Image (cartoon, rainbow, N blue to C red; front, side):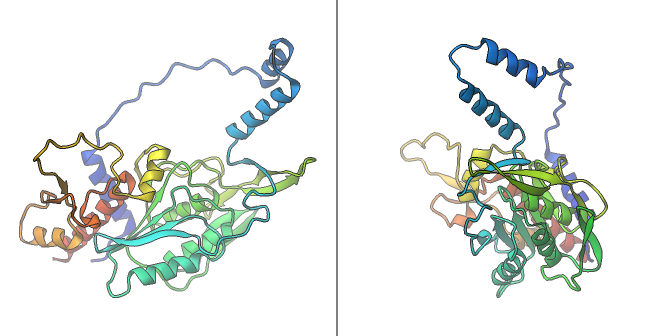
Amino acid sequence: MKLNLIQVRAFAVAAVAAVAVMTVAVAPARAEEAAGFQEVFSLIRSNLVGVSEAELDRAALQGLLQQLQGRVVLLTNGTAGGGAKVPESFLGRTNVLEDAFGYVRVDRVEKGLAGQLAAAHEKLSAGKKLKGLIVDLRFAGGLDYLAAVAAAEKFLAGDKPLLQIEGKVLRSTATNVVIAGPLVVLVNRETTAAAETLAAILRKANAAMIIGGATPGQAGVFMEYPLKNGQRLRLASGMVRLGDGTALTGAGLKPDVSVEVKSDDERAYLADPFTDLNPAAPPKPGATTAARRRMNEAELVRRQREGQNTEEDEFVGAAGDKHRQIMRDPALARAVDILKGIVLLKAARAN
């Protein structure tokens, strides 16, 4: 029986909620009205000792750039997007997890990404049909919204509006789905512009489940203005909206399953999803260590059919194969677990 993506998303979110610890946030007291910039800057300029006009200007500029990060960018001649050489590949690591699920990391959404995604999926599924795919957009950016639409079309089919930019509607024209099967997309607070747009398009079309941290809402049409010193100022001057008119500029994307991880930790997990950032104390002399093994999809289905325990209660030695060790990356581990759940649900409904 074929599963609807809405049903799959509801199932996965319910499964996650069943094991989540609920926390209640106490609303903070109403903050005082913020002081005006001109008033504060004038008082600092008139009364602060030991600071020059040039230092004040630099501090004010850095503050503006930091607070408006993503919507205002100061470019130098060496900044990417200002004549820098474009890399040939926009993909990072690709591999198969649990012998069943493809994993593709996207570094940047640019023209040509759609073809690279299709080629990577074909290579990963060579000789063995994948049960699902994970597209990792954490720390990904890019300003090519046409490329985001083209990449989304690899997972969609039919004529439908996908994006609105400066009054122009970008529609899907694909006649068939090139990359089929359950899809999970990973995002975080540094998934920006065209990358967060790609994730939003796929979620809106019910083609993917989104896992990770909320994106910053930095999708926008940018204009560049030359400065007297040779630098350029890039400003978000236009809105980006989904096909139904939902604004992405400033709003960002809220994941279906929220997994918040510190930025530095998440970068470490991208380099090695099995790395232990909080290792336990070394074992006592003579003691043996073991790593808990994650069962693959075939084992889960077999155990369910035979009425056996489906908990991951088997262990392998610490020197075991890499794919048999604990997946430490929280977002990626959650994605794998959800895809496993989808496989189990399909098997149960097929019986």
